[in-house]
Length: 175
Image 1 (tube, helix red, strand yellow):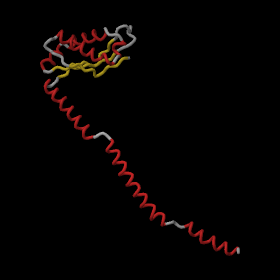
Image 2: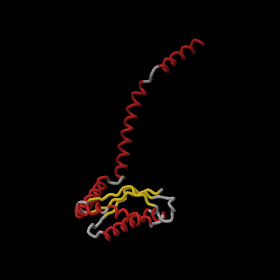
Image 3: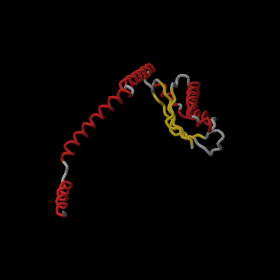
Image 4: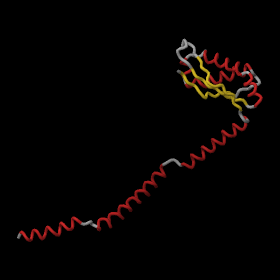
């Protein structure tokens, strides 16, 4: 009887030691088919529910062409730069500083040369205008545009022939 048990155990041990090729031959193709199905199902539903990327590209192209036509109507723009002005805002007693680099956009080379010739006067006007502002006013993002308009108007008032159209802040750092 003990011999019968030993005979039954030995064939089972041989089966466990070897690879089961039936599982690999059937399981691997089923796994690949499942991956392909999941890919097509998700691609079909996700692509249909996502916003149309072509329409987004078309709308951005339209906006770019509108901006280009606006810039073309203004003509080429020359920019007069003033680098690294250090300004004490009002009410800080010299404890806080504003580092400002600014550019003024004009349309002709003649206007640019006029700004270059009067650089010291323009720097003084910028420093006086900005130093009258409090730190709270200068740190508010929504008031930067009004400061740009004020600076452009001040230059246009002093030099009407320059016709400054745009003001750009390339550095605006409050310390």
